[in-house]
Amino acid sequence: MYFCVNKYLMTRSEENYIKTIFHLGRKGTQEVATNAIAELMETKPSSVTDMIKRLSEKDLVNYKRYQGVSLTALGNKTALNIIRKHRLWEVFLVEKLDFSWDEVHEVAEQLEHIKSDKLIDSLDRLLAYPKFDPHGDPIPDKNGGFKERDRELLSEVPVNTGGVCVGVKDSSATFLKFLDKNGIALGNQIKVMEIEEFDGSLNIEIDGRKMQISHVIASNLYIKASDEI
Amino acid sequence: MYFCVNKYLMTRSEENYIKTIFHLGRKGTQEVATNAIAELMETKPSSVTDMIKRLSEKDLVNYKRYQGVSLTALGNKTALNIIRKHRLWEVFLVEKLDFSWDEVHEVAEQLEHIKSDKLIDSLDRLLAYPKFDPHGDPIPDKNGGFKERDRELLSEVPVNTGGVCVGVKDSSATFLKFLDKNGIALGNQIKVMEIEEFDGSLNIEIDGRKMQISHVIASNLYIKASDEI
DNA sequence: ATTAAAATTTAGACAAATCTAAAAATTTGT
DNA sequence: ACAAATTTTTAGATTTGTCTAAATTTTAAT
Image (cartoon, rainbow over all chains, first blue to last red; front, side, top):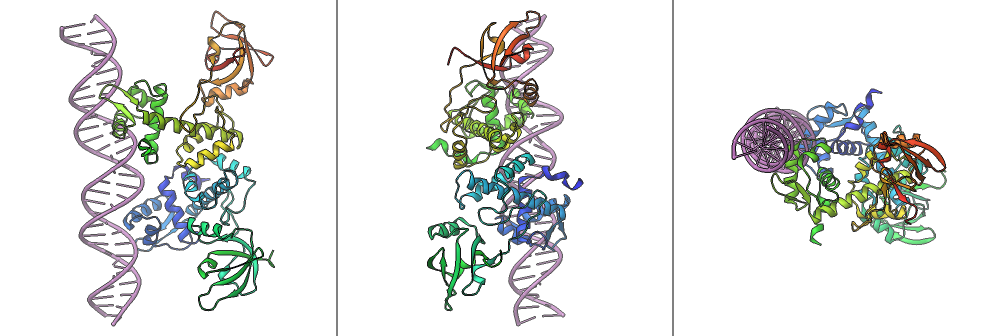
Protein backbone atom coordinates (compact mmCIF):
# COMPACT_ATOMS: atom_id res chain seq x y z
CA MET A 1 0.00 0.00 0.00
CA TYR A 2 1.36 3.33 -1.06
CA PHE A 3 0.41 5.26 2.06
CA CYS A 4 2.77 3.13 4.12
CA VAL A 5 5.81 4.13 2.13
CA ASN A 6 7.40 6.62 4.51
CA LYS A 7 6.45 4.85 7.72
CA TYR A 8 10.02 3.85 8.43
CA LEU A 9 11.60 7.03 7.16
CA MET A 10 10.24 9.31 9.84
CA THR A 11 12.59 10.94 12.27
CA ARG A 12 11.99 10.85 16.00
CA SER A 13 11.20 14.55 15.94
CA GLU A 14 8.64 14.19 13.16
CA GLU A 15 6.97 11.37 15.08
CA ASN A 16 6.77 13.51 18.20
CA TYR A 17 5.12 16.35 16.32
CA ILE A 18 2.57 13.99 14.75
CA LYS A 19 1.77 12.55 18.15
CA THR A 20 1.32 16.01 19.67
CA ILE A 21 -0.94 17.19 16.86
CA PHE A 22 -3.02 14.05 17.34
CA HIS A 23 -3.42 14.62 21.07
CA LEU A 24 -4.24 18.32 20.70
CA GLY A 25 -6.63 17.81 17.82
CA ARG A 26 -8.76 15.07 19.41
CA LYS A 27 -7.70 12.28 17.06
CA GLY A 28 -6.26 14.65 14.51
CA THR A 29 -9.54 15.78 13.04
CA GLN A 30 -9.51 19.27 14.54
CA GLU A 31 -7.25 22.14 13.52
CA VAL A 32 -4.43 22.72 15.96
CA ALA A 33 -2.73 26.06 16.69
CA THR A 34 1.00 26.51 16.21
CA ASN A 35 1.38 28.01 19.68
CA ALA A 36 -0.43 25.11 21.31
CA ILE A 37 2.01 22.65 19.74
CA ALA A 38 4.97 24.79 20.75
CA GLU A 39 3.79 25.00 24.34
CA LEU A 40 3.14 21.29 24.74
CA MET A 41 6.44 20.35 23.11
CA GLU A 42 8.36 23.02 25.01
CA THR A 43 9.74 24.52 21.83
CA LYS A 44 9.30 27.80 19.94
CA PRO A 45 6.45 28.59 17.52
CA SER A 46 8.94 29.27 14.75
CA SER A 47 10.34 25.76 15.11
CA VAL A 48 6.83 24.39 14.89
CA THR A 49 6.14 26.27 11.68
CA ASP A 50 9.32 24.85 10.13
CA MET A 51 8.41 21.32 11.07
CA ILE A 52 4.79 21.67 9.96
CA LYS A 53 6.03 22.61 6.50
CA ARG A 54 8.16 19.48 6.37
CA LEU A 55 5.28 17.29 7.55
CA SER A 56 3.07 18.93 4.97
CA GLU A 57 5.58 18.05 2.23
CA LYS A 58 5.30 14.43 3.35
CA ASP A 59 1.50 14.54 3.28
CA LEU A 60 1.18 13.89 6.98
CA VAL A 61 -0.66 17.13 7.76
CA ASN A 62 -2.98 19.61 6.07
CA TYR A 63 -1.50 23.07 6.29
CA LYS A 64 -2.45 26.56 5.15
CA ARG A 65 -0.43 29.50 6.43
CA TYR A 66 -1.93 31.11 9.53
CA GLN A 67 -4.77 28.57 9.51
CA GLY A 68 -3.52 25.92 11.91
CA VAL A 69 -2.79 22.32 11.10
CA SER A 70 -4.63 18.98 11.07
CA LEU A 71 -3.58 15.42 10.37
CA THR A 72 -4.19 13.75 7.02
CA ALA A 73 -5.41 10.14 6.90
CA LEU A 74 -1.77 9.07 6.67
CA GLY A 75 -0.80 11.31 9.57
CA ASN A 76 -3.63 9.90 11.64
CA LYS A 77 -2.61 6.34 10.93
CA THR A 78 0.96 7.20 11.82
CA ALA A 79 -0.10 8.80 15.11
CA LEU A 80 -2.19 5.78 16.07
CA ASN A 81 0.72 3.49 15.35
CA ILE A 82 3.02 5.47 17.63
CA ILE A 83 0.37 5.56 20.36
CA ARG A 84 -0.13 1.82 19.99
CA LYS A 85 3.57 1.27 20.55
CA HIS A 86 3.72 3.69 23.47
CA ARG A 87 0.84 2.05 25.30
CA LEU A 88 1.94 -1.53 24.62
CA TRP A 89 5.37 -0.72 26.04
CA GLU A 90 3.69 0.81 29.09
CA VAL A 91 1.79 -2.41 29.69
CA PHE A 92 5.02 -4.37 29.26
CA LEU A 93 6.84 -2.22 31.79
CA VAL A 94 4.10 -2.64 34.38
CA GLU A 95 3.19 -6.28 33.76
CA LYS A 96 6.59 -7.77 33.05
CA LEU A 97 9.13 -5.44 34.61
CA ASP A 98 7.21 -4.35 37.71
CA PHE A 99 7.30 -0.63 36.96
CA SER A 100 4.67 1.43 38.75
CA TRP A 101 2.19 3.37 36.62
CA ASP A 102 3.93 6.66 37.40
CA GLU A 103 7.30 5.44 36.09
CA VAL A 104 6.37 4.19 32.64
CA HIS A 105 5.81 7.33 30.62
CA GLU A 106 9.40 8.54 30.17
CA VAL A 107 10.74 5.16 29.11
CA ALA A 108 7.78 4.51 26.81
CA GLU A 109 8.50 7.86 25.15
CA GLN A 110 11.81 6.36 24.06
CA LEU A 111 10.57 2.86 23.25
CA GLU A 112 7.71 4.10 21.07
CA HIS A 113 10.21 5.12 18.38
CA ILE A 114 11.74 1.66 17.92
CA LYS A 115 11.05 0.54 14.38
CA SER A 116 10.09 -3.12 13.96
CA ASP A 117 6.68 -4.50 13.12
CA LYS A 118 7.66 -7.95 14.27
CA LEU A 119 8.76 -6.56 17.62
CA ILE A 120 5.50 -4.81 18.35
CA ASP A 121 3.35 -7.70 17.13
CA SER A 122 5.28 -10.13 19.32
CA LEU A 123 5.05 -7.81 22.28
CA ASP A 124 1.29 -7.60 21.75
CA ARG A 125 1.12 -11.40 21.80
CA LEU A 126 3.36 -11.69 24.89
CA LEU A 127 1.03 -9.34 26.73
CA ALA A 128 -2.05 -11.26 25.53
CA TYR A 129 -3.38 -8.44 23.33
CA PRO A 130 -4.23 -5.90 26.03
CA LYS A 131 -6.99 -3.41 25.22
CA PHE A 132 -6.00 -0.71 27.73
CA ASP A 133 -2.77 0.72 29.07
CA PRO A 134 -1.94 1.11 32.80
CA HIS A 135 -3.74 4.48 32.90
CA GLY A 136 -6.89 3.08 31.33
CA ASP A 137 -6.29 4.53 27.87
CA PRO A 138 -7.25 2.33 24.91
CA ILE A 139 -4.56 0.61 22.81
CA PRO A 140 -5.15 0.86 19.05
CA ASP A 141 -4.89 -2.41 17.15
CA LYS A 142 -2.53 -3.04 14.19
CA ASN A 143 -4.82 -1.11 11.87
CA GLY A 144 -5.27 1.84 14.21
CA GLY A 145 -8.73 0.78 15.30
CA PHE A 146 -9.83 1.07 18.91
CA LYS A 147 -13.02 1.70 20.79
CA GLU A 148 -13.12 4.46 23.38
CA ARG A 149 -14.42 2.89 26.56
CA ASP A 150 -17.79 4.09 27.79
CA ARG A 151 -16.71 6.11 30.79
CA GLU A 152 -17.45 9.30 32.70
CA LEU A 153 -15.50 11.66 34.89
CA LEU A 154 -16.25 11.06 38.55
CA SER A 155 -16.88 14.80 38.87
CA GLU A 156 -19.70 14.64 36.32
CA VAL A 157 -21.89 11.95 37.84
CA PRO A 158 -24.73 12.60 40.33
CA VAL A 159 -24.80 11.59 43.99
CA ASN A 160 -25.40 7.90 44.63
CA THR A 161 -23.85 6.89 41.32
CA GLY A 162 -21.28 4.11 41.53
CA GLY A 163 -18.92 2.36 39.21
CA VAL A 164 -15.52 0.89 38.65
CA CYS A 165 -12.54 3.23 38.37
CA VAL A 166 -11.29 2.59 34.82
CA GLY A 167 -8.92 5.43 34.02
CA VAL A 168 -7.22 8.70 34.81
CA LYS A 169 -7.42 11.88 32.77
CA ASP A 170 -4.19 13.38 34.10
CA SER A 171 -1.48 10.75 34.03
CA SER A 172 1.31 12.87 35.48
CA ALA A 173 3.56 11.15 38.00
CA THR A 174 2.44 13.64 40.64
CA PHE A 175 -1.23 12.73 40.32
CA LEU A 176 -0.55 8.99 40.04
CA LYS A 177 1.61 9.02 43.16
CA PHE A 178 -1.14 10.89 44.98
CA LEU A 179 -3.59 8.15 44.02
CA ASP A 180 -1.17 5.45 45.21
CA LYS A 181 -0.71 7.22 48.52
CA ASN A 182 -4.47 7.36 49.00
CA GLY A 183 -5.11 3.80 47.93
CA ILE A 184 -6.97 4.68 44.75
CA ALA A 185 -6.32 2.36 41.82
CA LEU A 186 -7.96 1.17 38.60
CA GLY A 187 -10.44 -1.57 39.34
CA ASN A 188 -11.63 -0.03 42.59
CA GLN A 189 -15.38 0.23 43.12
CA ILE A 190 -16.28 3.87 43.75
CA LYS A 191 -19.59 5.36 44.86
CA VAL A 192 -20.35 9.06 45.24
CA MET A 193 -22.04 9.55 48.62
CA GLU A 194 -22.24 13.33 48.80
CA ILE A 195 -21.09 16.37 46.89
CA GLU A 196 -20.07 19.39 48.97
CA GLU A 197 -21.71 22.46 47.51
CA PHE A 198 -19.14 24.90 48.86
CA ASP A 199 -16.03 23.62 47.01
CA GLY A 200 -17.35 20.72 44.95
CA SER A 201 -15.41 18.16 46.98
CA LEU A 202 -16.86 14.64 47.13
CA ASN A 203 -17.48 12.14 49.88
CA ILE A 204 -16.96 8.78 48.25
CA GLU A 205 -16.89 5.17 49.25
CA ILE A 206 -14.06 3.32 47.58
CA ASP A 207 -13.91 -0.47 47.96
CA GLY A 208 -15.95 -0.09 51.15
CA ARG A 209 -13.74 2.61 52.65
CA LYS A 210 -15.06 6.18 53.05
CA MET A 211 -12.96 9.17 52.04
CA GLN A 212 -13.19 12.74 50.85
CA ILE A 213 -11.57 13.95 47.61
CA SER A 214 -11.39 17.41 46.04
CA HIS A 215 -13.22 18.34 42.87
CA VAL A 216 -9.89 18.48 41.02
CA ILE A 217 -9.19 14.85 41.91
CA ALA A 218 -12.67 13.75 40.89
CA SER A 219 -12.36 15.55 37.57
CA ASN A 220 -9.33 13.42 36.73
CA LEU A 221 -10.81 10.02 37.52
CA TYR A 222 -12.91 8.05 35.06
CA ILE A 223 -15.52 5.54 36.19
CA LYS A 224 -17.59 3.10 34.25
CA ALA A 225 -21.13 3.01 35.54
CA SER A 226 -21.85 -0.42 36.99
CA ASP A 227 -25.29 -0.76 35.41
CA GLU A 228 -23.85 -0.45 31.93
CA ILE A 229 -21.82 -3.59 31.46
CA MET B 1 31.02 9.43 40.81
CA TYR B 2 32.33 12.04 38.41
CA PHE B 3 33.04 9.70 35.52
CA CYS B 4 29.36 8.88 35.23
CA VAL B 5 28.34 12.46 34.62
CA ASN B 6 27.86 12.33 30.86
CA LYS B 7 26.43 8.80 30.67
CA TYR B 8 23.00 10.06 29.79
CA LEU B 9 24.15 12.92 27.62
CA MET B 10 25.62 10.82 24.85
CA THR B 11 24.03 10.92 21.44
CA ARG B 12 23.18 7.77 19.55
CA SER B 13 25.97 8.48 17.11
CA GLU B 14 28.55 8.92 19.85
CA GLU B 15 27.47 5.63 21.40
CA ASN B 16 27.84 3.86 18.07
CA TYR B 17 31.36 5.17 17.62
CA ILE B 18 32.35 4.09 21.14
CA LYS B 19 30.94 0.62 20.48
CA THR B 20 32.80 0.32 17.20
CA ILE B 21 36.10 1.43 18.73
CA PHE B 22 35.60 -1.14 21.48
CA HIS B 23 34.97 -3.97 19.01
CA LEU B 24 37.88 -3.03 16.77
CA GLY B 25 40.31 -2.47 19.62
CA ARG B 26 39.70 -5.76 21.41
CA LYS B 27 38.06 -4.29 24.49
CA GLY B 28 39.29 -0.80 23.76
CA THR B 29 42.84 -1.32 24.88
CA GLN B 30 44.39 -1.30 21.41
CA GLU B 31 44.77 1.69 19.13
CA VAL B 32 42.25 1.72 16.32
CA ALA B 33 42.74 3.24 12.85
CA THR B 34 40.44 5.95 11.53
CA ASN B 35 39.90 4.07 8.28
CA ALA B 36 38.92 0.88 10.10
CA ILE B 37 36.22 2.73 12.00
CA ALA B 38 35.00 4.40 8.82
CA GLU B 39 34.78 1.11 6.98
CA LEU B 40 32.91 -0.72 9.74
CA MET B 41 30.48 2.16 10.23
CA GLU B 42 30.04 2.72 6.51
CA THR B 43 30.99 6.36 6.78
CA LYS B 44 33.92 8.52 5.63
CA PRO B 45 37.28 8.85 7.41
CA SER B 46 36.81 12.61 7.67
CA SER B 47 33.56 12.11 9.58
CA VAL B 48 35.37 9.74 11.91
CA THR B 49 38.06 12.31 12.62
CA ASP B 50 35.41 14.89 13.46
CA MET B 51 33.66 12.57 15.87
CA ILE B 52 36.88 11.38 17.48
CA LYS B 53 37.69 14.96 18.36
CA ARG B 54 34.33 15.36 20.03
CA LEU B 55 34.74 12.09 21.96
CA SER B 56 38.20 13.19 22.99
CA GLU B 57 36.76 16.44 24.39
CA LYS B 58 34.43 14.31 26.50
CA ASP B 59 37.30 12.14 27.76
CA LEU B 60 35.91 9.01 26.18
CA VAL B 61 38.91 8.34 23.94
CA ASN B 62 42.65 8.98 23.87
CA TYR B 63 43.57 10.76 20.69
CA LYS B 64 46.71 12.13 19.09
CA ARG B 65 46.58 13.30 15.48
CA TYR B 66 47.57 10.61 12.98
CA GLN B 67 48.13 8.13 15.84
CA GLY B 68 44.83 6.28 15.98
CA VAL B 69 42.43 6.20 18.88
CA SER B 70 41.81 4.10 21.98
CA LEU B 71 39.15 4.13 24.68
CA THR B 72 39.73 5.74 28.07
CA ALA B 73 38.53 3.99 31.23
CA LEU B 74 35.31 5.99 30.92
CA GLY B 75 34.97 5.10 27.25
CA ASN B 76 35.48 1.44 28.05
CA LYS B 77 32.87 1.47 30.78
CA THR B 78 30.47 3.20 28.40
CA ALA B 79 31.09 0.62 25.66
CA LEU B 80 30.50 -2.27 28.05
CA ASN B 81 27.26 -0.72 29.19
CA ILE B 82 25.99 -0.43 25.62
CA ILE B 83 27.06 -4.01 24.87
CA ARG B 84 25.32 -5.19 28.04
CA LYS B 85 22.12 -3.57 26.87
CA HIS B 86 22.46 -4.92 23.31
CA ARG B 87 22.98 -8.48 24.47
CA LEU B 88 20.27 -8.43 27.12
CA TRP B 89 17.77 -7.20 24.55
CA GLU B 90 18.89 -10.00 22.20
CA VAL B 91 18.16 -12.57 24.90
CA PHE B 92 14.78 -10.93 25.51
CA LEU B 93 13.87 -11.06 21.83
CA VAL B 94 14.75 -14.75 21.57
CA GLU B 95 13.46 -15.95 24.94
CA LYS B 96 10.33 -13.86 25.31
CA LEU B 97 9.33 -12.79 21.81
CA ASP B 98 10.35 -15.90 19.85
CA PHE B 99 12.75 -14.13 17.52
CA SER B 100 15.29 -16.39 15.84
CA TRP B 101 18.98 -15.68 16.45
CA ASP B 102 19.40 -14.21 12.98
CA GLU B 103 16.66 -11.61 13.51
CA VAL B 104 17.75 -10.00 16.75
CA HIS B 105 20.69 -7.84 15.77
CA GLU B 106 18.94 -5.00 13.93
CA VAL B 107 16.32 -4.47 16.59
CA ALA B 108 18.87 -4.72 19.41
CA GLU B 109 20.90 -2.02 17.65
CA GLN B 110 17.95 0.27 18.26
CA LEU B 111 17.04 -0.92 21.74
CA GLU B 112 20.60 -0.64 23.07
CA HIS B 113 20.28 3.18 23.02
CA ILE B 114 17.26 3.34 25.33
CA LYS B 115 18.30 5.20 28.46
CA SER B 116 16.96 3.83 31.73
CA ASP B 117 18.92 2.00 34.39
CA LYS B 118 15.78 0.66 35.96
CA LEU B 119 14.66 -0.74 32.61
CA ILE B 120 17.82 -2.68 32.00
CA ASP B 121 18.10 -3.95 35.56
CA SER B 122 14.51 -5.17 35.47
CA LEU B 123 15.06 -6.79 32.10
CA ASP B 124 18.11 -8.57 33.51
CA ARG B 125 15.95 -9.87 36.35
CA LEU B 126 13.10 -10.94 34.04
CA LEU B 127 15.60 -12.96 32.00
CA ALA B 128 17.11 -14.49 35.18
CA TYR B 129 20.48 -12.77 34.80
CA PRO B 130 21.71 -14.50 31.63
CA LYS B 131 25.47 -14.76 31.21
CA PHE B 132 25.51 -15.20 27.42
CA ASP B 133 23.55 -13.84 24.48
CA PRO B 134 21.92 -15.99 21.75
CA HIS B 135 25.21 -16.11 19.81
CA GLY B 136 27.22 -17.24 22.82
CA ASP B 137 28.79 -13.86 23.54
CA PRO B 138 29.17 -12.92 27.21
CA ILE B 139 26.90 -10.30 28.79
CA PRO B 140 28.74 -7.77 30.98
CA ASP B 141 27.23 -7.21 34.42
CA LYS B 142 26.16 -3.81 35.80
CA ASN B 143 29.75 -2.85 36.50
CA GLY B 144 31.04 -3.93 33.11
CA GLY B 145 32.58 -7.12 34.44
CA PHE B 146 32.36 -10.37 32.49
CA LYS B 147 34.41 -13.47 32.03
CA GLU B 148 35.26 -14.57 28.52
CA ARG B 149 34.22 -18.21 28.28
CA ASP B 150 36.98 -20.75 27.83
CA ARG B 151 36.38 -21.72 24.24
CA GLU B 152 38.18 -22.60 21.02
CA LEU B 153 37.42 -22.35 17.33
CA LEU B 154 36.38 -25.70 15.93
CA SER B 155 38.96 -25.18 13.18
CA GLU B 156 41.78 -25.00 15.72
CA VAL B 157 41.28 -28.25 17.59
CA PRO B 158 42.91 -31.57 16.65
CA VAL B 159 41.14 -34.66 15.31
CA ASN B 160 39.16 -36.61 17.89
CA THR B 161 38.54 -33.56 20.03
CA GLY B 162 34.95 -33.04 21.09
CA GLY B 163 32.94 -30.45 22.93
CA VAL B 164 29.76 -28.46 23.18
CA CYS B 165 29.09 -25.77 20.60
CA VAL B 166 28.99 -22.59 22.67
CA GLY B 167 29.20 -19.72 20.22
CA VAL B 168 29.62 -18.28 16.76
CA LYS B 169 32.35 -15.91 15.64
CA ASP B 170 30.44 -14.53 12.66
CA SER B 171 26.92 -13.66 13.73
CA SER B 172 25.65 -12.44 10.38
CA ALA B 173 22.14 -13.50 9.44
CA THR B 174 23.56 -15.38 6.44
CA PHE B 175 25.79 -17.60 8.55
CA LEU B 176 23.16 -18.14 11.25
CA LYS B 177 20.55 -19.16 8.69
CA PHE B 178 23.07 -21.58 7.19
CA LEU B 179 23.55 -23.15 10.62
CA ASP B 180 19.77 -23.44 11.12
CA LYS B 181 19.40 -25.09 7.73
CA ASN B 182 22.06 -27.63 8.64
CA GLY B 183 20.77 -28.30 12.12
CA ILE B 184 23.71 -26.76 13.94
CA ALA B 185 22.85 -24.92 17.12
CA LEU B 186 24.41 -23.85 20.40
CA GLY B 187 24.36 -26.71 22.86
CA ASN B 188 25.05 -29.38 20.25
CA GLN B 189 27.77 -31.91 21.05
CA ILE B 190 30.39 -31.79 18.29
CA LYS B 191 33.32 -34.11 17.69
CA VAL B 192 35.97 -33.72 14.97
CA MET B 193 36.35 -37.09 13.24
CA GLU B 194 38.69 -36.21 10.40
CA ILE B 195 40.31 -33.16 8.83
CA GLU B 196 40.67 -33.17 5.04
CA GLU B 197 44.20 -32.11 4.18
CA PHE B 198 43.30 -30.83 0.72
CA ASP B 199 40.87 -28.03 1.66
CA GLY B 200 40.79 -28.16 5.44
CA SER B 201 37.17 -29.31 5.51
CA LEU B 202 36.08 -31.35 8.53
CA ASN B 203 34.13 -34.53 9.03
CA ILE B 204 32.29 -34.02 12.28
CA GLU B 205 29.77 -35.86 14.38
CA ILE B 206 27.14 -33.49 15.74
CA ASP B 207 24.66 -34.84 18.29
CA GLY B 208 25.32 -38.32 16.87
CA ARG B 209 24.80 -37.29 13.22
CA LYS B 210 27.75 -37.29 10.81
CA MET B 211 28.32 -34.37 8.46
CA GLN B 212 31.00 -32.52 6.57
CA ILE B 213 31.64 -28.80 6.98
CA SER B 214 34.09 -26.46 5.26
CA HIS B 215 37.05 -24.88 7.00
CA VAL B 216 35.32 -21.49 6.83
CA ILE B 217 32.34 -22.84 8.78
CA ALA B 218 34.59 -24.50 11.35
CA SER B 219 36.54 -21.29 11.82
CA ASN B 220 33.34 -19.52 12.86
CA LEU B 221 32.13 -22.02 15.44
CA TYR B 222 33.31 -22.04 19.04
CA ILE B 223 33.34 -25.20 21.14
CA LYS B 224 34.05 -25.75 24.77
CA ALA B 225 36.19 -28.83 25.29
CA SER B 226 34.20 -31.41 27.24
CA ASP B 227 37.03 -32.36 29.59
CA GLU B 228 37.30 -28.82 30.86
CA ILE B 229 34.07 -28.23 32.74
C1' DA C 1 67.10 8.49 1.67
C1' DT C 2 63.83 9.85 -1.43
C1' DT C 3 59.78 9.05 -3.55
C1' DA C 4 55.33 6.90 -4.04
C1' DA C 5 51.37 5.21 -1.74
C1' DA C 6 48.31 5.09 1.92
C1' DA C 7 46.18 7.04 5.85
C1' DT C 8 44.60 10.96 8.14
C1' DT C 9 43.25 15.62 8.79
C1' DT C 10 41.59 20.22 7.40
C1' DA C 11 38.55 23.34 5.06
C1' DG C 12 34.32 24.35 3.44
C1' DA C 13 29.57 22.86 2.40
C1' DC C 14 25.11 20.79 3.52
C1' DA C 15 20.69 18.96 5.82
C1' DA C 16 18.01 18.51 10.08
C1' DA C 17 16.27 20.70 13.85
C1' DT C 18 16.48 24.20 16.59
C1' DC C 19 16.86 29.27 18.15
C1' DT C 20 16.25 34.77 18.23
C1' DA C 21 14.53 38.82 16.36
C1' DA C 22 11.77 41.02 13.21
C1' DA C 23 7.91 41.12 9.93
C1' DA C 24 3.30 39.84 8.53
C1' DA C 25 -1.35 38.19 9.20
C1' DT C 26 -5.17 37.49 12.10
C1' DT C 27 -8.06 38.40 15.94
C1' DT C 28 -9.92 41.37 19.44
C1' DG C 29 -11.56 45.51 21.84
C1' DT C 30 -13.70 49.64 21.76
C1' DA D 1 -13.80 50.23 11.59
C1' DC D 2 -9.48 50.60 13.09
C1' DA D 3 -5.86 50.36 16.36
C1' DA D 4 -3.81 47.16 19.57
C1' DA D 5 -2.76 42.71 20.91
C1' DT D 6 -1.95 38.18 19.68
C1' DT D 7 -0.56 34.63 16.68
C1' DT D 8 2.12 33.02 13.07
C1' DT D 9 5.67 33.23 9.76
C1' DT D 10 10.10 34.64 7.74
C1' DA D 11 14.99 35.54 7.84
C1' DG D 12 19.20 34.50 9.46
C1' DA D 13 22.19 32.07 12.85
C1' DT D 14 23.61 27.72 15.45
C1' DT D 15 24.63 22.76 16.50
C1' DT D 16 25.18 17.97 15.17
C1' DG D 17 26.68 14.90 12.07
C1' DT D 18 27.68 14.18 7.74
C1' DC D 19 29.96 14.90 3.03
C1' DT D 20 33.69 16.15 -0.87
C1' DA D 21 37.94 17.76 -2.18
C1' DA D 22 42.33 19.25 -1.03
C1' DA D 23 46.28 19.27 2.05
C1' DT D 24 49.18 17.01 5.34
C1' DT D 25 51.44 13.31 7.77
C1' DT D 26 52.93 8.66 8.07
C1' DT D 27 54.33 4.33 6.03
C1' DA D 28 56.31 1.52 2.49
C1' DA D 29 59.26 0.68 -1.56
C1' DT D 30 63.05 0.99 -4.22
